[in-house]
Length: 63
Length: 189
Image (cartoon, rainbow over all chains, first blue to last red; front, top):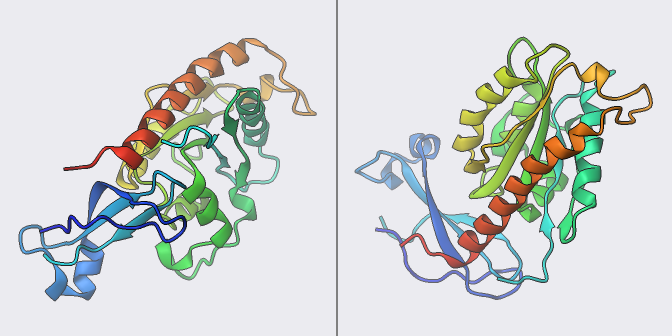
């Protein structure tokens, strides 16, 4: 399950908005234990900052 | 949304080839972007991005290119059509980023010496851009017979191109504004 904890922008300190998910199949080849069992890929989340526009792609804390 | 932040829309010149006429197109697009309020732009020339050819993808990120891509709200890609496809170096450069592109707008200006204005390179590039997380607009720039559009110094010879590009840029800017608002304010769930 994806984390719903708000990320804080390391550049300007504002709360970021979670707006996209991406499946990384190549990362799952390197680290199969971390793969999401439903997709076989590692799920990544995109969070963007309304203050400065920075986007971070992170892996959820739990799967 | 911080409305004081200008939209940043860099123009990627997608060929390193010597004698490229696409450079005239890229400079023309930059001029048209610069004439609009609230827009910042700059040229990203893939010839000037020193990327390794012994690896590929995010592991060979170039700090300057990635930083510009992160700051961008949208992109214009100016690309010629080589053997019905996109220049290899353009793909090599695009593949070095991912998070920098997600939910950002992109429009393509195809360039060709023949009559089709890069339609085939545009069609080939669209699925690549989608997989990179970019959002394609539904206007294209089709610079057919580009050798007749600019003089030897790069000066535009036919002002009709200003109007043609205006439609493209209006759509791109609208999409850039909407997607910035979405990225920064509309949660996925």
